[in-house]
Length: 84
Image (cartoon, rainbow, N blue to C red; front, side):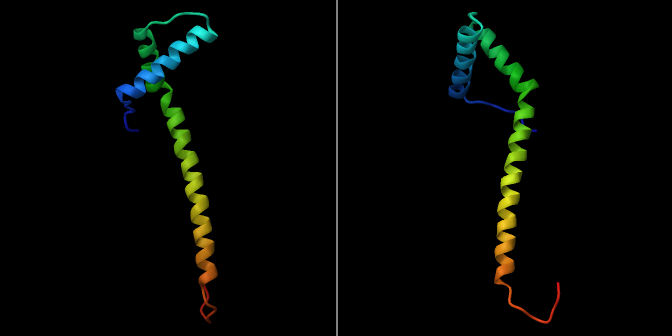
């Protein structure tokens, strides 16, 4: 798997969401450093599971579209004496 890297703007948004979650759901304040550390932990240790799920979902979409294309090609075939 390629290393997941976020832009500074993306990282800022994610860190703010982590901080907000801690404050709103856990009633705890978390500093910038701790939020970034937690984000890095989830990215490194858990992110691969989400990444792989996304790839599996993309494969299903592509396979479905390829099945549609394959069926469309069979519809274009002309009858001949040859068999497949």
